[in-house]
Length: 257
Image 1 (cartoon, rainbow, N blue to C red):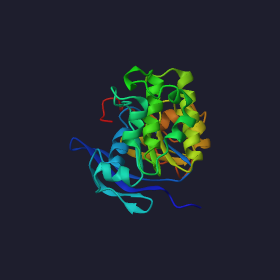
Image 2 (cartoon, one colour; image 1 turned 90 degrees about the vertical axis):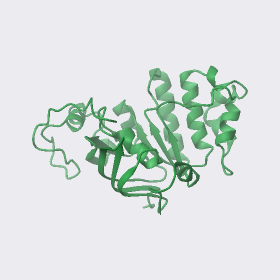
Image 3 (cartoon, helix red, strand yellow; image 1 turned 180 degrees about the vertical axis):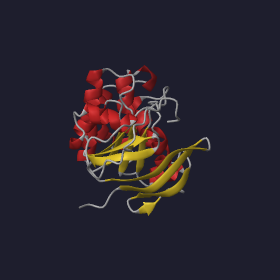
């Protein structure tokens, strides 16, 4: 088995000095899609920000290709091979598509690979990014991550505000990224779409992992997903399901993400 491209052990992350994520341990393998699920406020984005260096890691270790990165500045993590596709679809709106890619390009980054992956962008090389559709902007953000020649790409809720047809198109791209040998870590609001493309899944509740296992184990099981998201008696004796035996009816909607 290949060594993990990204490895977290006992990671705790704060948001504005408030503890949000605690004791998270997981691996992301090269060529695989690792899915992170959970209700709003479960800590998914905070975990991603901690990995990327945008939120302080208060405990634990983060290793990228075997090297500890939890104390590195965000730009040094990016140079080491960590790509981050954030929720906001941030682009340089007054720069063209090609200029957006060039400013993110590393020495080993290849623009032609992006244009083959997204022929929509190839047709708009000279168009300012601000005139792209939402789906095209998301493709551009993914392309910018790709031209940085990453070993790991973190993708946070890329489907937000996009039409279902576009979301399915982008999910296919996630599979293609993994096919290039990249380790993909995917947060997605549409759980079953993520489980369809994923290999391994971790479910967060209140900042901690309550389930780790193959995506196939949760795929299509809406009742079990709901219990993992919000609490309640476990539905199986699986050793990977650590959800509490006591019913937990507290909502997570108001917790920091």
